[in-house]
Image 1 (cartoon, helix red, strand yellow):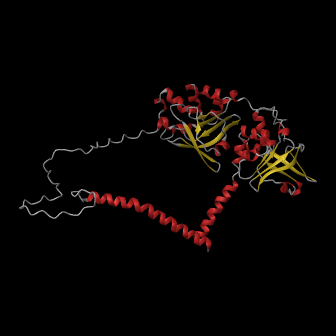
Image 2 (cartoon, rainbow, N blue to C red):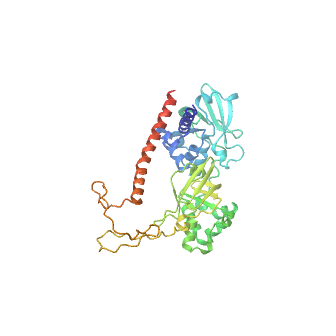
Image 3 (cartoon, one colour):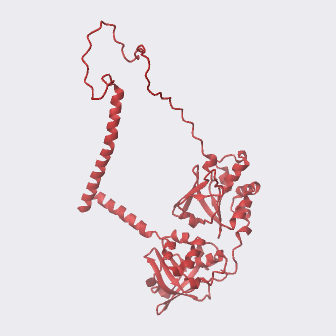
Length: 423
């Protein structure tokens, strides 16, 4: 019965894992009315943030409603859409069962650190008669948006509801984020405790590469100052200028990947160092809120976010990222195989002396020859029956019987499990 419960537990675990997974892009792709909303979720990487959370409500805008904010810069659009993502589960039924008729809900905008006070909260009020209003939690704000209809629910995991208009918090439109090319990257790095990395970017000229790539999408993985002092970090002064440039470019990807996006990343990430001569890529693993980058030589935890301003992301890492193309140890050359000579006729030679472990025959008088031994059909009568043949036979036997034994074990195991389930 223990196996029975274990089997059921594993089955429910797989099912629950499958159910808890959601993809907002896939959900909205089935509704053409939200194609613009879906597009902006993808461009701002809010889709990755939504997909990385277990319980969430998305207040979707149809193509007509979202047109009112389309004229703003992408970073501003991201902030507005962040206010439409609630960190709680609300379906139509729950909207009409709000305690005391009104509540405040935390949004993704509150988690960015860009929302002063309670500007990252949304006021949800049941207006009775089937109407529910949404507005900024800032004092004096109006309920400028209302619930229109349900789009999709995966109970207690994700709910998508249509609302009539965007929610505009005070000041959210007044101070657009600066252009990525205008961001002082070195100043931000120095303030974040990455002075060594910033200095290397300037002295090598790689900073100009970063600045020119920022407008099209850039993510920087900046090692802190302590990372350069860690054991195992190579002496950078001994690197050629070309290798140093490759090492620094390896710490940036030509795409916008905030922390939430990295959590859902499955494919290798190409870096600015990637070229025809080497992959220079990174792989990502995540566990909960922890994200780790792997190089093939070492790995590093992503420590903190310095800047998240679409399309530029600056993150700090605990270790210097060492690409295998520069720092992988070359394997020791394998010894050359012994030359194998093909059998060929050779003149008769006098018998070689017997090995020390085999006693040489005594020089006794010749005795009559023994009767010939029977040999397998087709085998030469003088084929040796020594240990070499015996070893080959044993190996062949093992090669044949091992898979058969494994198959038997699998069959028996399957029968036992089926018997338990039928009990």
